[in-house]
Length: 111
Image 1: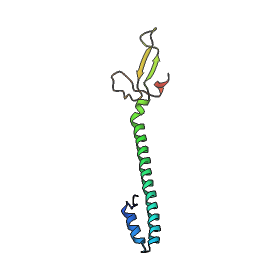
Image 2: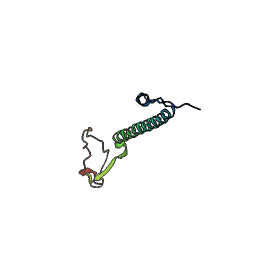
Image 3: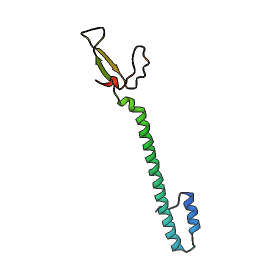
Image 4: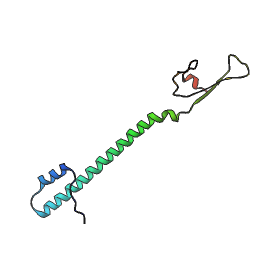
C-alpha cells in the first residue's frame, strides 16, 4: 500500500505546526491537511486549464477570424459595357494594397 505524503511545502509546514504528538490526533490532522492539499491542487489545476482554454479561444478567434470570413462577391453594372456587369471578388481582410482596387466597406458588402 502506498504511503500518503504531503507534496506542497506550505502544507508540510502547516502539518508540522499543528502536530500534537498524540498519534490518533496527528493522524486525523494529517488526513485533513492531506485532503485540503488535494483540493487546493485540483483547484489550481482546474484554474490553469480554464485559463489556458480561454487564452487559446481568444487567440484562435483573432488568428482564424479572417479564415472564417469568406471572400465577398459583388456585381454592379459596368461603366464601359452595357451587356457585362463589373464583378468583384474581395476578402474582408483586404487592405486596399492593389492599385486600382478599393478596400471592402460596409456599403460594398450589399450583394
